[in-house]
Length: 152
Image 1: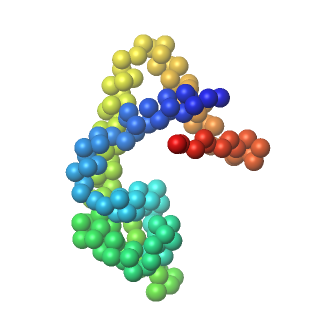
Image 2 (image 1 turned 180 degrees about the vertical axis):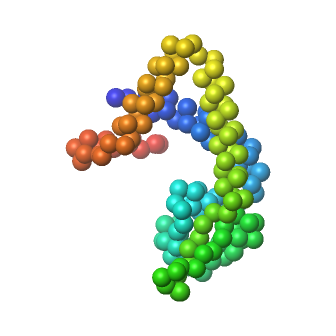
């Protein structure tokens, strides 16, 4: 397998999956703030300490970042039911709406591209995507892990 398959995959992901880059740019967020929102998007909630650890920053710095995100209305702090000292962070509906709008933009681009294909090509793409999705769901065996080439 060569690099061309990966490049094709990334071309598709960037072509539709990231939505409209202008929508991302309009958010006026710092990179750490954006990373936190993305982490929270794929988790129902995360503790402040987990976010600090994943982001490789101090709790005090994380608190400041979260304060700003909370001020924008993008995150909410939720006290832990089992441990009063622990606080969780989750996306607000406002932040989820932003992700949904960006996803919708990507979805529209995907449907437009698929619409330019013949029915046979559409079935081929669907089969290929189904095979790829199933491969992602299979457990990874240690002897099948392939190291990614280092970009230079």
